[in-house]
Amino acid sequence: MNAAGPSYVRSKMRRTLTPTLSLSTGRGGKREHEIALMNELGRWVKIFGRTALPVIFAAILLLAGGCGGTPSKANIELRKTNQQLQSQIDDLNRRHDADEATIRGLQAMATTAPVLPESQLDQLFTTAGLKFGNLTGGYRPDPNVPGDTMLKVYVVPIDEQGQKLKAAGSFKVGLFDLALKSDNRLGTWDFDLEQSRADWYGEALLYTYVLDCPWQKIPRDAHLMARVTFTDALTHRVFTVDKEVTVEPPGE
Image (tube, rainbow, N blue to C red):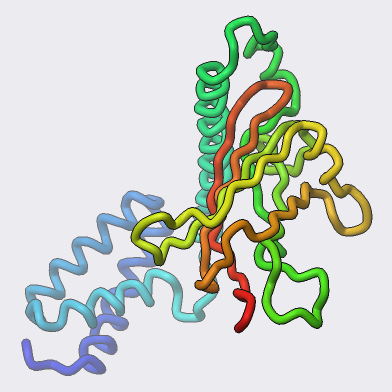
């Protein structure tokens, strides 16, 4: 019996296993369905041997999911639950980032700086993270000039739900060539509150800060890493995010 081929195993299991699975899902619900599957798996391993285990397991999955390939109601509900849980995890991660940013901000600022209590901040739409725009990367104002002349950063604060937020604050941008073993910083650009305000674009298709960072050191590699730090003017929270960027070095 152990030498039975996959086709024989599948056909034999289909004739005897399908009624068991249908009975278990119809009577006892999810738990009984799982028990029935495990019992049948053990029984068929004894009959055909462990070498047929992959075929047996695949057959049980096919039969349990239905021969027609239509997702069951339980599977649909499970996917919905997973999506809801993932959304909750994302929200909790953003809240965690906001809490850490609050701690960094309190540690960095002077003790006399006015700050709203957390109980009041929680009632407001405040920054909980940063999101880069897809256009972030190398840029040249004149398309006729060979190679990029600057890094252009598109970045916007987001709230705890991941929605874009026009929040005032200052930025610090760093650019690094990770291919270099030492002295890999290519530049640092600071944008104070006034400069950042002037670099906000909220018209047409843009709803973001756009930060121009002309080369301080000419990059040699096309793949670099940009680091943006944002200090929120209202909450004094500090956020830092990294992004791999692509540029076209001058002369290439």
